[in-house]
Length: 453
Ligand SMILES: Nc1nc2c(ncn2[C@@H]2O[C@H](COP(=O)(O)OP(=O)(O)OP(=O)(O)O)[C@@H](O)[C@H]2O)c(=O)[nH]1
Image 1 (tube, rainbow, N blue to C red):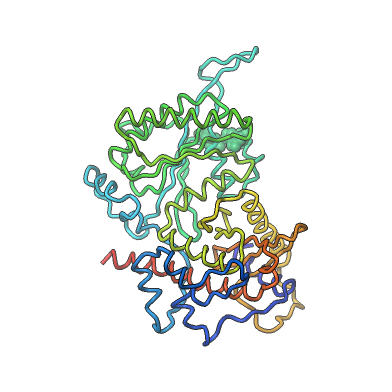
Image 2 (cartoon, rainbow, N blue to C red):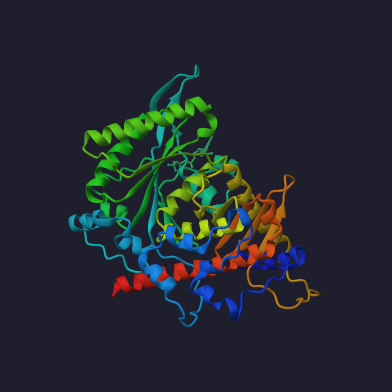
């Protein structure tokens, strides 16, 4: 069943289980489309932030702010919140570095259908195990860092245990991801010598969103770190703006102490090597990851967030929503991959993230059960377009989920008892947020079009 079907089913469940039919703000609130935040209703008095103070503190891009403040425009049709990362490719993220790279290498105009790439790279090496357990490097047994496993678990919902049966990658696997934004994931075979002259660097690193380097933390990582250093030094010459994301992977098998030591050692080795070559502030970021917990989703969320135009605007909107509604933590999730593309700026709480992520699974699973077309089922009046659901857990924590569009949903954790009582206002505020979100995304498209002229 397609995802449309899943959400359609979730809609039905909402009507049956939640039973709350809250109408969209009508003419009295139509200005909310233009000044979306000023109509957020306070749900929890203690945490309400007046609009005036919101306006002073938020840092919405000036062009976007002009748009939001350009009151009394006729309502524009709502667009799907599907992002294109072209604007990033055209320079907003890579900045001058990208331009410099293009002046050195083949000019790249990045047509509109060019999709940004996430490169998954790492080292695969052979190890021969003697019967007494000591190791000798030889052409014998593969030790693989886990790139394909990460891609399969995050983007294809493969259960982690099944990655044991994945075969080694023999050529570059190009995976197109169609979601709130389109991008490609290229999984490189661990042994590929892409820095050799026979490979065109522009083909590999042009249009790049991020380079994700996977290091097996359970293995001897010195070779992998050395190869990563070589790669960074080469790439930095031509594409200095590229984000290098280092996943120190398979940490599930390590003790806390060993994990920290490994992390520090790898960071140290890479930064020493880079500073020896004069790169003091290279854009390298490090994550401890494992496919057996949520850390790999969390890490991928951070990687993807760096590619999203107007991320700070989204965060400000979510902050304002959370402050007005008494949300403890709010995530804007991509339903398919369950990576979050934005959240409020409070510290990340893994327990909250896990609860919210699991709740999406629950809704999608129930949707699968109930989405079949029953011949006797009759629609009971008008139905609200988007799915909405909530659950109250044993410790009185409420999780509230609302579909924002075909790809995204907003999931919030509510512990404030006062806020929990005001579900109607929460729903209304979330719908106002939804309008703002679509404004932000449609604005991204307009900016691209203007840039293209
Ligand atoms: N313990 C543990 N094992 C993992 C993790 N991620 C992947 N693996 C295992 O690592 C092995 C190799 O995974 P792959 O994803 O095929 O490795 P790869 O880097 O794509 O290998 P190549 O395609 O040959 O370059 C598999 O047996 C996975 O089950 C992890 O987080 N923890």
